[in-house]
Length: 187
Length: 263
Figure 1 (cartoon, rainbow over the protein chains, first blue to last red):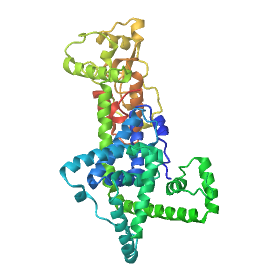
Figure 2: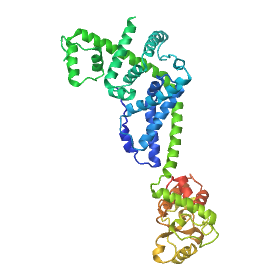
Figure 3: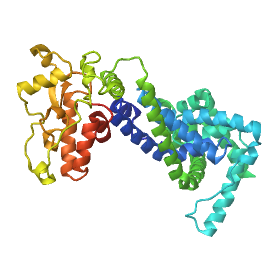
Figure 4: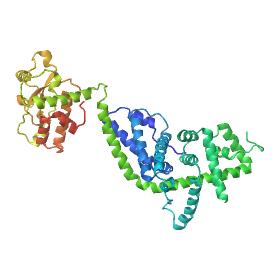
């Protein structure tokens, strides 16, 4: 399980005063967190089937919201989980809006592979990747999200909070998805 | 708990791998896995599948990182914009803040002087706030001919050398202030351009600066004087430019060279 080295409570304490210099320092701290988390949150946002640019917008909005919270000294939760929760809510809203305009399948990214692989590895990995991707995409969205959030190192109770389901349902969802992957492997 | 007849389900094995089982169950399952080859194999299979999933998700992140820089710049701009709009909003809050109040008063004083400056020596009330910046008609500033090396070689840190009592009285009088001791103590007869920057003790360079008007007081101006002297000697600012800026509006110069609010 991964974790962030910077505690939001520490940041909030450090920047509880609202002077101009504190705001600048807080801004730098938020940008530092953005550097650490941007890719992971972008990946999560895009798993809702929204475009890359919409995903970028959402991640930026998430960090703007974080800046506000810290500036007002309102933040006292788990930063890692909070970032995913806000990204989740924003991405869900964007998905709803996008669904009205375009079919989700048209928005999904085509698979791209790790450029560090040689052509043979890339082909082999590409096949596995494409297969895995098609199996995962066939899962209900909530199951896909649970798998992703677990891979991001979140605890089940955090996943439950973000996705909006019970703790037991998270565990059941993960187990069910693994069973589906196994079945697909056997075919 | 787990025994020869009670094997672990896939869900329990998953919770075991993710350390989501209660401690006693986790311990029990760990012992069980050592003695149950079927559960051990199942555990390894689930663990392998989870690792494959992690690798899959990690491979996605590689291609996304390339766009990070542009997005970061965009966020930086949004943060700066939000910071600025927040400070504007914060200034409108009813909460009393002496610094902001003083800045507002200074603005009003500047506007007031711009409108009324030079019309009359004695018009308006004699409140301390009125003299945050001098009346330019009365105190335009006066400097002596001085070289940069002279300015920078002087080791005089008295920013406001005492002027004679008669000069002091004359300054108070021209600003329409009573010259009794109690009132005079509320003001410092200040040099608009301080001697360290070439200012003289001519009455045109002196004005009654209040000690206590929030942020924009005599202490804040002293700080600006020291800062400008340092900048002039560092050749960051030209001497004539420093003299002109402090003479035309020392609060604006403070904001420009030091920051938004006074001390």
